[in-house]
Amino acid sequence: MKKLHKLVLNSYLGPFVITFFIALFIILMQFLWKYIDDLVGKGLEWYIIAELLFYASATFVPMALPLAVLLSSIMTMGSMGEHYELVGFKSAGISLRKIMWPMVVISFFLVIIAFYFSNNVLPVANLKMYSLLYDVRQQRPAFNIMEGVYYKGIEDYVIKVEDKDADGQTLRDIKIYDHTDRRGNVNMTVAEWGTMIVTPDKRNMIFTLYNGTNYQDMRQQNPRDPAKPFQRSHFEEQVMRFDLSAFDLTRTDEELFKSNYQMLTLDQLIFFEDSISNELNQRKESYRNDYYTRMAYYSLTDPDKLDTIAENQFKQVDLMKSGSPSSVQMQIDRAMSMVRSNKDHAYYSHDELRRWRRQLARYQIEFHRKFTLSFACVVLFLIGAPLGAIIRKGGFGLPVVISVLFFVVFHVLSITGEKFAREGVLAAHQGMWIAPLVLLPVGILLTIKASTDSTLFDIDSYLKRFEKFIGVFRKTQEK
Image (spheres, rainbow, N blue to C red):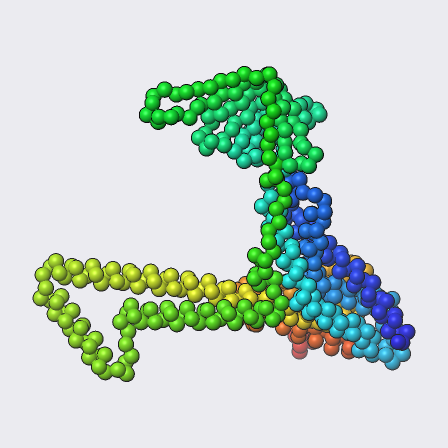
């Protein structure tokens, strides 16, 4: 390996790793902020949250990787241009193509890695992340009784405590409503004070109540009896045990999520796409046949059936002319009922087919996404490397601003194309390839401009051209 190649690789790999993890961290913090309400206050163990963030960070690689390629390539070439290293290489007869060759090789390996990640790692990460996120969102809030607030976290019980001591275990003025009989507030326990202790296995909560009374409406043997039995009992000490197993995190079987389009590889996506396409075609044929049957549709090439339709129509016309008002109204009501039925069936069929098309589009979109990620790395590299050579600025200043602008354009185009494909406005292969194909000519143009030492971002050159234009314009006016 030449010293030039080593220099370029050392200059490129460092910023790439740093920018990749910075972009991944920023996106992960956005995810954490989005689901902060589902994570806080549920008593989750630290390793559960760490596992969720680990799988979530893996699912964000497709977004962080193109941004890292774009930013690091701009920073590398911009830094070399800022320190006049590019000028030295070109004065020695080394073209920009040879200077960028090590970065091209790295980008080629990134394309292979990105495709392998999208097809093999990303489906597993999506499965783990979304299944765990579903369980976390379904998890009940942690057991926490607050002063003066009715607590309903324990099933079939409502607890209210007026005051809690500093130790967090001693409670004052306690009210416990027992709804296990499903008859409303017919069983209430009141105590002056008590203690609240969790068992070592955290499976039960033990309330020890002191100086209290239990009020209970007894169930009647005869519902028609006007008497209302009532029981009141006093106690000095009473122990109540509450089951806390419902507060444990329950893991859902991952098999329930495996058929989702985000959890499939290319082969699986092709299989599901074929299955949905066949089902969609069958439903189209079924609705078409049903529609023809409902509308008494016959082929225009069958004269016998045309004669039968004409004869029936003439009979209906004669009946409308010669029939009594009641029979005419009956025919009208019957026709209107048939029209409404056909209209409702048409709306239902349209909505059903639309749902199946959208479901098919999701699998097709995910199929093309596995290729667009790899191609996006190439396109953004073609933009970033020559752009850095043109602007000749390194560091995290101007390169970050330019990278963010191009990435925002790429991301907006990607989201727009995906939405159009999902809604059926565009085909999946058209919507998913809009962003790369729109930016590819930009990358090719910038590469050409950088190879020819273009002054694309040189403000002085534009000012000189403007002054020259003004001079020519003045000479024209003078003549």
